[in-house]
Amino acid sequence: MSVKIFDTPEVQDFLKTVSGFDQSGGNERAKQIMHRLLSDLYRLVDDYDVTPEEFWSSVSVLNALGEGTQFGLLAPGLGFDHYLDMRMDAEDKQRGLSGGTPRTIEGPLYVAGAPEAEGFARMDDGTDSGAEVMWLTGQVRDVDGQPVTGAKVEIWHADSKGGYSFFDPSQSEYNLRRTIITDSQGRYTARSIIPSGYGVPEGCATDQVLKLLGRHGQRPAHIHYFISAPGHKHLTTQINLAGDPYTFDDFAFATREELVIEGRRIEDPAEADKRGLEGPFTEVVFDVELARTDAPELQHRHKRPRALESEEAESQQASQAKV
Image (cartoon, rainbow, N blue to C red; front, side, top):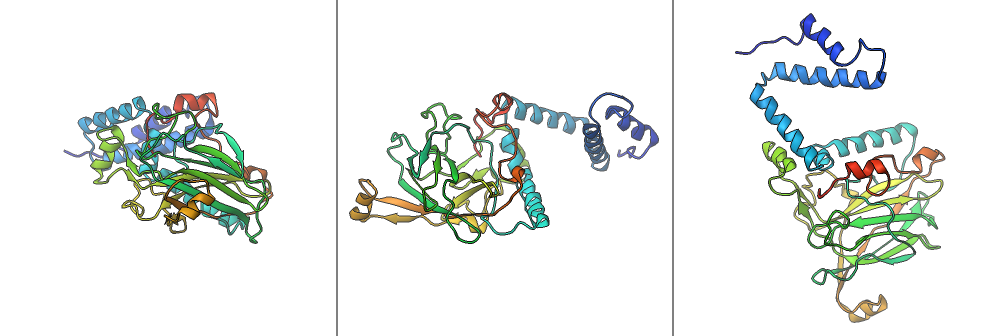
């Protein structure tokens, strides 16, 4: 039997009470948002005749997500990260900001405090012996094509098994994480390894939700970036390596056409020797264009919990999540 009670005065008054509208304390914006959220959920229970069994099953999933600190993992899978990017793209358009390399999602696995280097850095610790050597390089330019000297390029990515240092205790501190300051030509270069694509842990709460939707939890091989410079809009982005089976089927919806990069495998010993390498390697070139802005708030990454960046982050970090 299906009943509809949402629109009754009793339920509407109850929603106001639950949301704290009859209380003088608290935060007014929080009350408004909670009222809207609860109203939508109460209406959903009515419209879909949600049973007590279904409701408490959902609560169990939420508990499992919290216990495994997986909300930061499920959020991109449900499109929240990409939707926020879409909103920021629209805000840039409204401000008249144009040009520049496209943004895409940050993910939950950034760790603050990576070692800093000028122009060049080696990112891997040399222990991933089965991995392909990667020569990652590019130039940071402004919208007029002029090099941006002294830009801060923060890079982080997974190892050949799909794990990230800090979250994967088997890796050394800051493995595959570096901050590189661009040289006089706006160039940055890193020696690293080709990262692997990976998926959410089998059977975890995030995996259970995705499977209910008939979806997978796989990500293609990718490399994360923060790029910033005074007078330019901060850029949060990542590149996907072409040829991965999930390049255009990323469960986190991070793929953008302009951010798919083809690696070039080089087997010429002379080319390897020029770079101080001992054998074949793959060169990945990613040039970055930064849009200009005088707004200080746009020159820095937005605030959110991040590992080793704040005490709040330490209690909200993604634990073993892989995004």
